[in-house]
Structures are given as structure tokens and as C-alpha cells.
Image 1 (cartoon, rainbow, N blue to C red):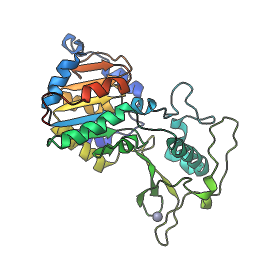
Image 2 (cartoon, rainbow, N blue to C red):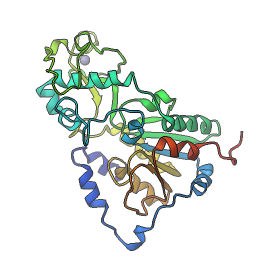
Image 3 (cartoon, rainbow, N blue to C red):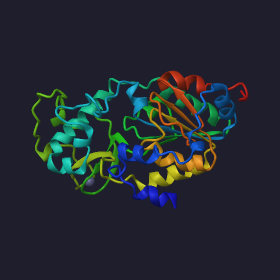
Length: 308
Ligand SMILES: [Zn+2]
């Protein structure tokens, strides 16, 4: 029944403040045990794990310099992501929303995976040769895990590099730069930039024969539900993992807060790698503090117990 609960949740219904308010309430003094930062103890469990789920969030991308357009100073022109990443904003002004996404796609040409992405990808490849599995469940839409070499990835918020047709529903990968001729040179983030106000016919259009419908970014916008097929796969991974890492996001805020409790409930160790201090609860066994590009590589490096 967890799946039904998860499926009914929307991003709008799951604001960080809601989750904090709900989850910070300690249920008993036992729940306030401090998580361990004993790397050797983590490594011991890691060396025996057969099925590792790695949830990643904005912090991993931030260490590659990817802007999130959220929080203090996080603006594109006069707006933040929550103003533009909505179906309403797209309906009202598709040209402006496409300028925003075009800018974000172009920015990614100048960014690269960092040591955290690379450590996860290297770990997946190495463990797969030992018959062990690593699955990345990410809220990031920048495809840096893919570029780092990860294969087994569930992108719960979609991708900047996928489009969906508003007319026929076709979803497709799209790495064109610019995505269409009219957007070339558009999308400047400066607050004084005027909207390009492109006619809707000049925005990205579907290439299916006879369709030509308006394309939108295939990302999950605020107020939209997560894709149920992907959630089913997430569910399967979480139900079968024997170690869960939460990287670059807190286990007590969305989206990890949505998934971590069911893992912890099965008694599976959860390890958090994060810049922020979080309320210590039994939800996780380990907490490693600091930039995940620094903390993750030694945690996921080859263990002496691994065969060659
Ligand atoms: Zn179409």
C-alpha cells in the first residue's frame, strides 16, 4: 500500500516545510539516537551489500556548479524555479518557460560530473562484475549521473534532455543545441533581459509525422504527480535493497523523506552524505558530513573484502 500512498503524492503537496514540520517531531527518545559517522563500520556493511540504492538530490549537482534557481539568490531574471516550472506558467507563457529551459540545457554544456557522480558510477560498474547491483534514484534532471557513466538510473523528476509532445504525448531524448532555431542566443538570465516573446509556432515542435504539436520539457513540474511506472520501479528497488545511501539531500526532506522511512522500517541501514546537519533519528544509521564529492569516494572505494 506504500505505492498507493506514494502515487497519490504530488510535488506541491510535499513542500519541504510540511515534511520538516511532520518529521521533526520525535516519536520517542529512542528515535533521537545519533547517527554514526564511523566510516569503517559503514564500509563493513557496504562490503557485504548486494543491492544498493543511492538516492541523490540537488547537493550533488550543486557541487558541479549546476544552478537550481531556488532559495536565496536563485533567480532566473525575476523568477525562481517554482514560478516557471509549473503547467500554469507554461500554459500562460510557453515562450518564457522554454527560454528558461533552453538556458538550463545550454548551461549544462559547461558543467561536468564531479567526484561524487564518478564514485557512484565507478562503484556500479565494479560491483556489477561481482554480481552486485547499484541503482541511482535521482531527483536531478541534469543527466550528470548518466554522463559520469551510471547505467542503472531512475530519474524521478525527468530530464532536461527529454521532451514530451503536448499533442500526441510522444516522449523523446533531445540533445540539440539550440533546441530550435528561434531560441538560439535567447534565455539570458539577467534580470533586465526582455522576454523573447517567440510565437508558439517557433518553439520546439513535435517531429512525429503529421503532428507538429508543441513540445514541453519532460520534467515533473510543481503540482504534477510523479510518473507511476518510475515509482513502481523505485518501489521495487527500495523493497529489495540491503543498503541505502542518501546523497546531497537530507533524509528528512522531500524526496528522500518519501522513500527512506520504508527502507528504515525493514531494518535496512541508511547512510546520509550531506552538507546539512539534520535531526538525528533512527531513520538513518550513518551520517557523513561535508561535500559529497569529498565524503563519497572513500566510502565507495574498493573494499579489501571484494574479490578482484
Ligand atoms: Zn506529437
